Length: 145
Image: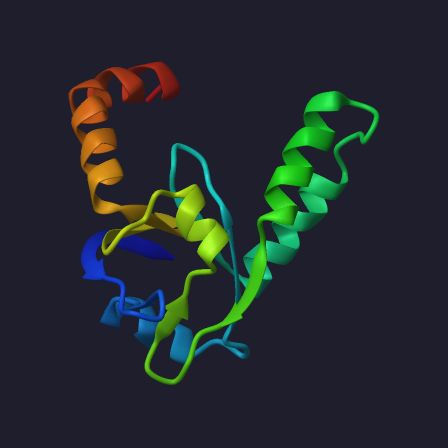
């Protein structure tokens, strides 16, 4: 559903414009409501409301008696913010999420199938450099094709 890697910058109000290919898809959505939250590996996750609802159901089914489930759900859901994408395709990043992801001015927006990830450019560059050489090894360990 979401694919590609795009370079953007934040404006003075902590907003960025989604890539045009993403905006085109969003025009067909019934709602412009999205959810942004703490991601993994130092990025932010951005989900459409449909995908968020499905994910929420899965996470709610985890046993609250397990410490890891409680910790993950607390951090994940307490970090979530419901947002609306404006008519120009802009997204505002709350300050606490900007701080979490060490986002300064330059960002990388990546489409990762059912979610959009928002990265500080320096953090993304480091992640990419550390993992591009391992890409084939990772594929070999994950897939039996």
